[in-house]
Image 1 (tube, rainbow, N blue to C red):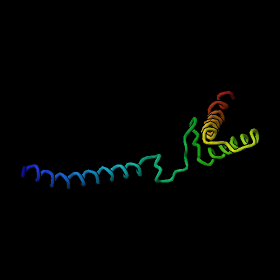
Image 2 (image 1 turned 180 degrees about the vertical axis):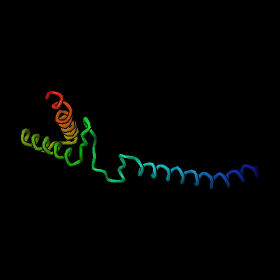
Image 3 (image 1 turned 90 degrees about the vertical axis):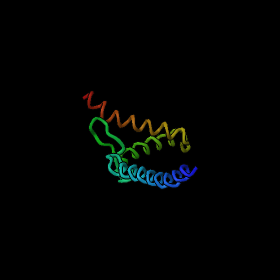
Image 4 (image 1 turned 45 degrees about the vertical axis):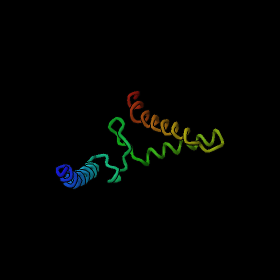
Length: 103
């Protein structure tokens, strides 16, 4: 029983140190990656070698939303906004990947 008590006391401190090191490694890994959210990069993705900024994507989404309001006379809900975001991304794919291939 004394052995179990000794292990419990010493393993508690080792467990705390291990958890601390794991959290520190996770946070440092996130800071050092290219797509780090913590570094506040404005790039959403890349299409055919062209970097898509968050402003460009939001502009395409806003254009889709304005068309939706004009056609249906109401603001889109969450389900419709998901579809509008997908349509905006498809529009950017067409603009930067498909149209150059046609030309």
